[in-house]
Length: 93
Image (cartoon, rainbow, N blue to C red; front, side, top):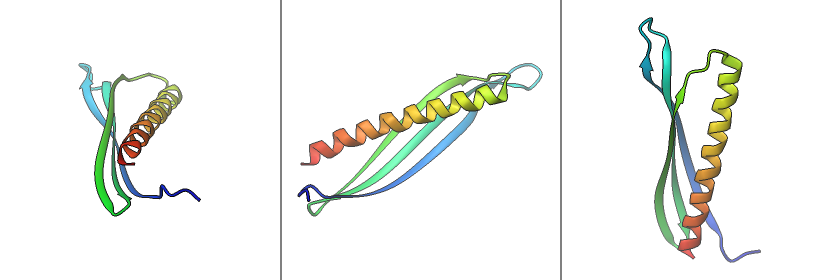
């Protein structure tokens, strides 16, 4: 029932890239990155915006704990991007 109707198309890419390895070739550090592109249509305006989050992470021996930590980081990325998008939408009004 609101007059503020936004049409949003979104594309998100998640990347996990190796930053460094030890002498034996085992991964020691990597970077997690999320890039979200939005196309926003609001009152006949078309706006494109992109938000990026990234974090360097040390590799954890326990793969279960590693995956759990990565999921926490990804959720934090999503929350941060969501807040940035909301702020952008408020500036379009």
